[in-house]
Length: 345
Image (cartoon, rainbow, N blue to C red; front, side, top):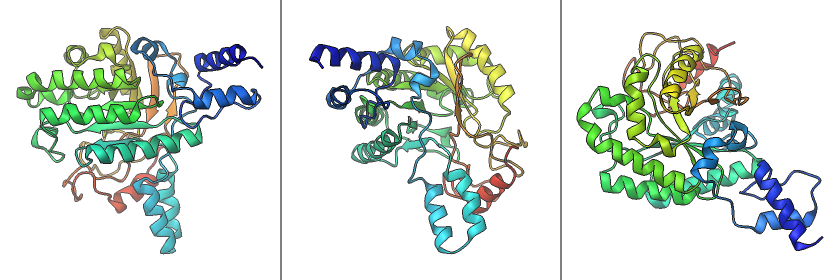
């Protein structure tokens, strides 16, 4: 086959989303020389316009990636060794699902390269798309249970490290949960925070990554309040926004809210966290009793602005030292088991 014919095949596959930019897996049935060319060619970096006009199934090529080395997976291994078969099976229902990978200020730039590199390599091997969450904004959580974050200068450099590690790979990044909605709780952070997030979005988008910005949830801020913040934070360079992260509201509440936000932000797409909303709102956002796992994560059909329902919050990770929980982000075994027991039917 001629070189020009090979390049034509590769270009056609790339447009259709069938070329895996990491790992080089091609659909069966195409000539071996085309497959070789696709593996050795530089990975395609999508432009902002391409990201925004793509169908959800193109952006989340192959479906959502499962993190094989997740905390839940390690717990399953421990329980199996202890012959706690029933508990291992229960936690396995969390470990078997794609859960977003959180990247926070607990990772140095060098560690980011390792963590992200391993995740995208594993996802590519499976022919799936990984989802990440950045969580290192200065004054994070306004001094609450998840307080922390980097300085402004550190944050910009840290985000460049995330972008460099993801460049050329198919991935989605949810940028800083609570960061925009929480301006209502601590308005003093707005002046510094909005341009920082906009810079992060611009940096990630420049690396060809689909990004989503924080829109809180359906019972926190109104569409009229959050839309201008999304605009100021750079949604024009993003794929869209996310809702319900680490919260418990039903999907119908969130999509109704998100559709209104979308209409105010030039038709932006969105994703919704359904990790723990199986039993709906239980009176508090912080380790509520009676919560259950939501429906399994899935990429949307593409007929609406909803791109995917995701498990963003790690089911089993504590919200903070409330209602008997350990520190925020710490694995809480009894709570994880309760989430599985009360999962959505």
